[in-house]
Image (cartoon, rainbow, N blue to C red):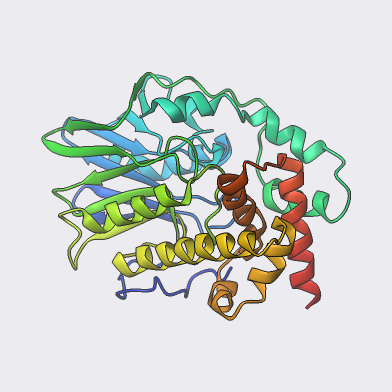
Length: 334
């Protein structure tokens, strides 16, 4: 993925896509990590007179400590007392242990899922012998992160549906929209600031990856972001990965998902296997704009996710990474 000069697909937002802490509204900050690929996620921060709230930690404690250090200029007098995790993927929660006194809030489904893929599972994946090019692909995706010794504390407050919070008179709306990307995705809406932290419902200039689904829920989540009453021309949307965006960025993700679902159903009805459908879809004219997005080989996982919805078929994590690695290798050779 290109680093700093990418379009958000909508208005020309003034804040550049550069690593570090950026104020996006009064007392509201985004912590951005280019290039937004595997593990390089974004986080958010709300600072009030009554303390601060962090939206997501990062993939390891080294990165999370660096982020927290960068935040001390605004949190020094207003320490972080609440952490909201948008979902259970490690690049959004593995740093939670660095805030042992904070209340950790997420959905019930995300809390259950956090125990399924602990940091030790990533270490095992990196150490597994899956053959080339899968080993190389996994190393390129996750080898930069330090998973050893990380313990992820259990969330201290969970909910289903929605949860309204108040911090220093600032309203905070948490809304469950998963299962979609994962089992328990949520949105964080700050209505008085016109800011939405979307977690991995949004990958901007990167390819969404469907670990859970169904696709219809993810499309509905995009629609929910677009429907939020503060989503006006000056609104800022902070994606889980990629540069800050606006409504057009949301529509781009939605368009990919709608195309993916329809194309997979058509391929399945024509008798194609999931592997055959991946090759068919990758060659379609409608897919060519999405080849400009990072990690477009995630198509291999996404097709299988839709097939799982259709006929119950499933594959293991090594199989899925193998399929992405093979597609990435084909891409490199072409």
